[in-house]
Image (cartoon, rainbow, N blue to C red):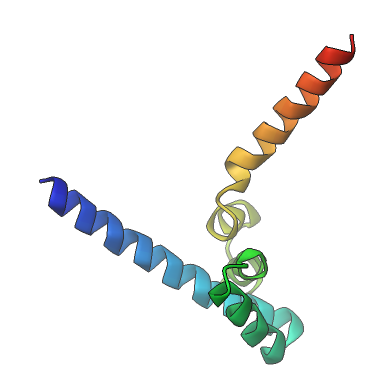
Length: 98
């Protein structure tokens, strides 16, 4: 059972990553041109995937016609955890000053 769940999880992850890569390429290509899109793919292969995430947001939002929030979740899913973390850090900084 654990093996089956692991295989299903791996297939879902690979599908998600392919979807993000396609949306990223289409979004950057739509906004900035094919040269920049290819550059973002090359950067993602070098483990710098932020431009591809932004491109995935743009691709899902502007090219595929998604609402901006699901497009944001597709392109940069860590934002859902990143923003509250930053807000809590800011709150801690101001609490220490008092």
